[in-house]
Image 1 (spheres, helix red, strand yellow):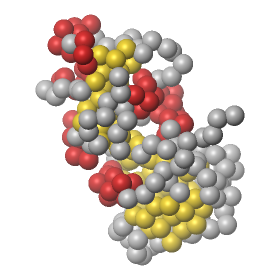
Image 2 (cartoon, helix red, strand yellow):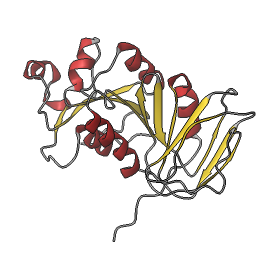
Image 3 (cartoon, helix red, strand yellow):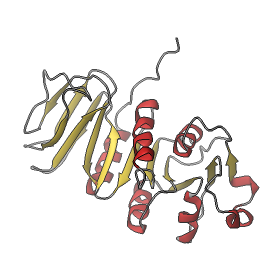
Length: 227
């Protein structure tokens, strides 16, 4: 079963997630989906997930009676993470992931991989004090001057920019040669264009609402064509 009754959902993973992070995510993505053991974090806040998705290896057995069969969506395969399963099975306009970037580094890297794997989806990852997303082909953000804008390529990619202190025009970005961390806003709106999917953007979490609104006004990348 695929969840499609709301336009924006927060996916709560089993990693570290504070009450402040959860509330902030829900301010732009009010629906709730638990990635396996993330159901315990949702329950501890007196909230209820629409769906609990995963292989259930970290789901506390004590929660099963209160969750009920209708909300449990067990996916037994071990080839993908629970966060990946939630993205795959939750078809809404916007997803915000919390508790997926910590504490284990391998899980954090896997969550970043999901952003590129589902390049046609609008997904924001939140771990205070930052948010992270895959940049769409074109993006305009109205950010205050001197704010940090970090760009990190997950693949070879080129881009154009306006409004950054250090323009990215003509730079061949690649995870093994050139990255763009700690750029900053100069003046006016930041306008970005990219040649291909692969560029991650990291900003302060105080701009979550701005980013969510900007993503709602643009298109992501088309799905990869099958061989």
